[in-house]
Amino acid sequence: MNYRHAYHAGNHADVFKHLVLTRLIALMSRKEQPFAYLDTHAGLGLYDLRGDQATRTGEWLEGIGRLWQATDRPALVDDYLRVINRMNPDGELRYYPGSPELSRRLMRQQDRVLLNEKHPEDGQLLKDNMKKDPRVAVHLGEGWHVPRALLPVPEKRAVMLIDPPFEQLDELQRCAKALKEAISRMRQTVVAIWYPIKDPRALRRFYQDLAGSGAPKLLRVELLVHPVDTPDSLNGSGLAIANPPWGLEEELRELLPWLAQLLGQTRGGWTLDWLIAES
Ligand SMILES: C[S@@+](CC[C@H](N)C(=O)[O-])C[C@H]1O[C@@H](n2cnc3c(N)ncnc32)[C@H](O)[C@@H]1O
Image (cartoon, rainbow, N blue to C red; front, side, top):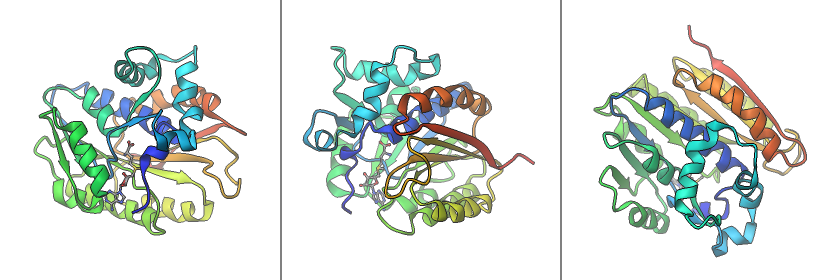
């Protein structure tokens, strides 16, 4: 396990993923009934952008660094920015929330946050970072076991983020398998899989696997910062979202053109379509 998310925290892929996550949480919160948030590959929870690892890559400068400076932000960014503002009360951008911290801060008293991280050091840091919040449970185990270990949840409503490091060649296939498992255990689970846009051939196979997952509905959303065929580069990233809450598609159609323009490097772009349309 070589991957450490601290090198990449706040980059364009994190901004895209985390913004969509904030909208999922907001839309799930429209109903009073509680829901659970499950994070299979949770990372540390929060990050210091002035720390050694983030400084070495400087990736955040082209991600949250750009959004922080933007003056024309749409209202759909408010929840995300509110969390970051509260973490940086002096107005200087330094601390950045990972998916655990974002969800913890946005979820309600009646909701639960179930986090899993396998890296022993990062897992311990995650535990330390989350220990004051009684709604949060941290597991230090295998992320691919989360669907069968934790689903179905008693709340009967859940958002699950699947966000592996993509260090292993089979991780796209594992994501599709985890989706299938999650849906078979609790059909209405909102599952969001993050994936890198690097290798168009591997993605074609992944899309086929997703389309055969048995999910009732599956939305595909992608944000590009370089042309999709640029070799040896992270050209953007995608989220495949099973059972997206009503209203998400419209919100993303409003948000993505702005985000693509903000985060595009050699060329920004976005796509949104249904891999499985509602029957
Ligand atoms: C992309 S990062 C997660 C970032 C986090 N979800 C966020 O948005 O803030 C992937 C994480 O998965 C962890 N990891 C790698 N292999 C794992 C496995 N098999 N099970 C659980 N966690 C794993 C890594 O240590 C790393 O912290």
